[in-house]
Image: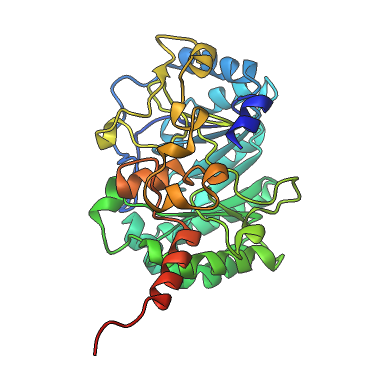
Length: 368
């Protein structure tokens, strides 16, 4: 599969841009440990230059995030620079600083959609986010954005507390006119690693994947968009991936192939979720736009080698022996690295956990 991707060519169809690492909350599950702004965040002029470079590389979608992107007060100007070049722009926000005036600006700027983080029903969401009253404020903000004629989305990080609430949470989102719902797996990185009570274990995928697949299959609203760290293969696979495209199954991590992550100081990664300095890891930073153009970083020989130069022999453990090894390439790089410290052995895999379960059933009882 990677040979086919090379033939088609690598270009960043989707960019996720951390406008600032500054945040107005300290959430228990924050993988980037956001809170304080980086000392060297991009200036507005540098950000506008980067916006043009993204457009030059044929980037089609940019998600503005953080930290909390609203804390960067010049975000409308950055959004306008992208939209002026034909890029679709959306925003992911925790909603705490969202106001009716923000809705007016988002509409005027031309955001394609606004995605609010909602991590469970009220007690769960406010336990994770640590802000009393936030749940109702987020729902009210969703209503305001919808009434303004913008598409409203929601993002939920699946953890042990929210898992039993998924069906009820979907009903809440439906009542508030949410069109799209991205659900993704919470992995033990950043603040989440400090809260084991929230961490989903690999074997939990045996429950999670059929439930998410069933929600995808039922055709209800909001429409479910499983994150790339949810999977892989087995019976749920077609329901998770089939969006009417030519390939209705997982074809491997897209970091550095069709996805690019941008940190607020100009560091470039294959995917924003991949760990970096805040987690004591520098392996995934490919360069900085203050030192090289974005195009030079993207096209640099050897860049994003963990995906672009992948070989099956690099895989370890179960992944090395899996029937899907060549096409899957070990699943989501972020999920794999978060648990094992290597990109090439992913325990967060439905097929792997299913095979281990079947194997344990088949093993003869040795006791008396």
